[in-house]
Image (cartoon, rainbow, N blue to C red; front, side, top):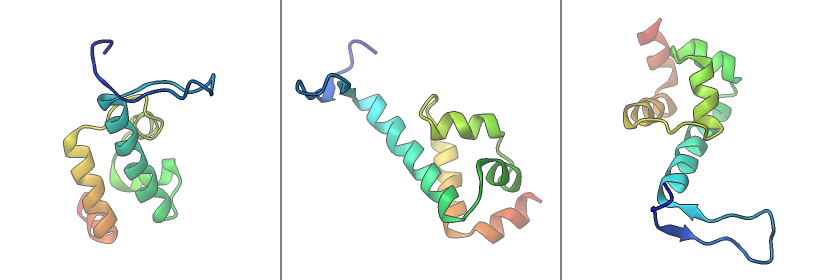
Length: 92
């Protein structure tokens, strides 16, 4: 990861700021999509995980950017965002 190009350099005036790599930006955008989808449906992490059959620990890791959600998970979340009831019925 140290060899990755920095795409957003840290603000030198902010001691808490840090450089952002392509990988970190992608992970953050994926986390935001998942979190916005879940909160848009008005579900807690536990409720979303249960309803859509995602391990709650995995969901937390994705939302907090501890792990990068894989492409298939992002596709699944996009389908959930469009058709939450249909997906919930399909996985029930």
